[in-house]
Amino acid sequence: MKNRIRLTTLVEIAISVALAVALSYLKFFRMPQGGSVSLQMVPIVVLAVRCGTIPGLIGGLLFGIIRMMLSPDFYYPLQALLDYPIAFTTIGLAGIWVRYGKDKIDYLRNGLALVFVFGLRFISHVIAGKLFFGQYAPEGMNEWWYAITYNAAHLVPELVVTLIVIMILMTRREIFEQKLIR
Amino acid sequence: MIKNITIGQYIPGESVIHRLDPRTKILITVLFISLLFLVNSFFGYGLAAAIIFTAVLLSKIPVKFILRGIRPLLVIIILTLSLHFFMTEGRVIFKIGFLKVTYEGLTRGLMMGLRLILLVLGTSILTLTTSPILLTDGIESLMTPLKKLGFPAHELAMMMTIALRFIPTLLEETDKIMKAQMARGADFESGNIFQRAKSLVPILIPLFVNAFRRADDLAIAMEARGYRGGEGRTKFRVLKFTYYDFLVLIIITALVIVGSIYL
Image (cartoon, rainbow over the protein chains, first blue to last red):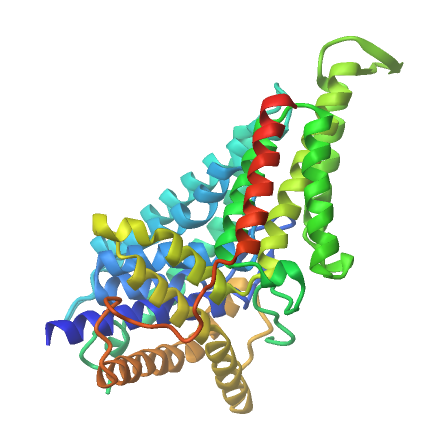
């Protein structure tokens, strides 16, 4: 039985990652130099709440690696790591705080948790951007400012979109509870 | 909304580069990237460019696919070049008004631009000639030594393979559900992005329910066929490291060592 739960979790991580990649193709808009707004983070958050934080983290990591394999934006080794695997792994942390309650759902707590994990992802992208410009732009350019505005421009809409959708999905127990489907 | 999506960049082919073992190609790419960050002269970048040029020729991939990776970078490259040209202090070559171009700025800017282009070309040759599944197999195989330290290389690779296998299936399913909801009068195109996101909820619910049901079916099927993790498992497609892989790897390693010492 233990083996069965383990195997189910393994497959659910894989399918959630596939769903995240599929949803990443449904773009609301695209930034000129990489980055776009889509519902790609919804399956990872659902996975983290449904199966637990560790499966969520693994799912985020795999999503990052697959995104890197499918369309690499590779400019500097540490930049690539921060922009893909590390950035998306942080989303799995949502599993620690986001609670799917039996009777009452604490929307404020869940919302703040999502804002926090997106904040971590934002920091990861900003450091990656700073590294990239640190490598290729000459001294004196305000790299931090550019990295912060560029990433905020697509991460804030993505956060809001994810928040809206997760909040609506919260009322559907069959999505967040492992036993209920079938 | 979902039309003509190509997943990944892989272009099937039978060229010498396609037939190289994925592990060889991953290692070569790593070596190539380190070469780019170790050299600091035009000869060094010339060597890297020669390696890439040979790989492109041998891979028989149309140049247009290879250049496609550079297009989003064009703005950055031009920005990098011009910033370097005008903002680096040093020996002045010529002046246009208050803008002065320095020798240091010119060489530095050109080198940075070259490095960026070569880096993008190097990584895209890997993804253009290797299918994601083979790439996953290669990564798993390279990670095998870490299994002794308890690193779940097999499980991670298994999840990646399943995920890659189901991306097209789930895309198709998304499309199908979207069309079904559109037939009932759903509207996904109008409104701002927040309204559009909200309108996608009627797609997401059946999508999630179906996806998790599919996951459950798959887990049962795997268990019924006796899946017990990586221990003693055999593969349908076995990676083969040939003499030819060995030779290519030796040549590239030698070039990178020589390049990073002398150039």
